[in-house]
Image (tube, rainbow, N blue to C red; front, side):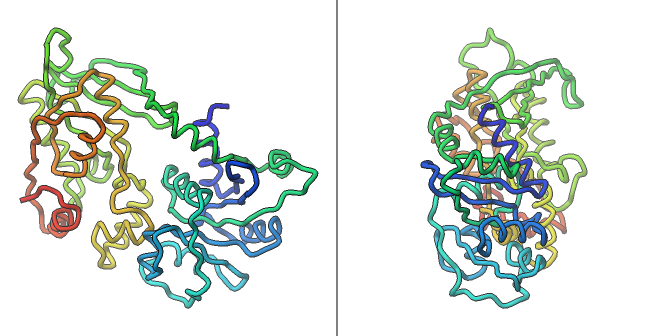
Length: 368
């Protein structure tokens, strides 16, 4: 089985409330892992019975900071039988903690197993918090036999690390077709597969950008992160839909451009967590603090796929439509030359004006 398929299976198991076993590089340390957001009494009991000890909850460095726990790494806290499911979820992502817990019991976790566990959860768009237990394997069994006997999926993190080290950003064009759109009839859509991931990626080529006879052509590029609420339902809470429309207007009027549409809902925390962030915003937090309170970084996005798409299309010099300086910096660091930055001027409305201020003052976006 390919590693990408194995990893997707691990994520699927965690999403449906099942447990998985992760092992370190040497198959010496093993943890039983569950997603915190799917926790129930049965799961907690399973952890206690398999490990003969109380399970621990893992919190990300961002979540620890929000709880006034001083640590630059992940932290863990032992969950004895007094902890309820509601208290555990509240500890994982509540705006305020509605129960007392002993800060002296918090342990700083500078371990690869713990760090990679949270990365797997994030990849699955789950909250970056997990329940884990250390498990001891009987001397007469291998970890594979132990896991198989209990019908638990097993993954060794060395496979993930090796894949990351040897990752050559393999990208393939899967299909392409003409796609006349409202802005212009002269458009084409291309779908890609990236590193054998399950996610679907695509871009839209507009106008003369697809003319192979043009030499030294510099395309106008918009790398747009998916926003279901803004792009489809025209939410007034953000300006994503307006940025998408304005970008397409620019490309259509110039009869050239590339729109790369990335599945990065909510700055890549996923739709469910984005809605959780909206709930926290209704309680008074801004868009940055809401993500941090959930345990995420303020922006979880990477533009590796977009960079690979542009290089696959043989474009290394571009004009970029963006207000985001972090996007500009990442593209430059990873080998793209940006000849011109085209800022989008969107007027705020009475609902999202504070959102604009947060993006400008906290995220450094180029907003007038």
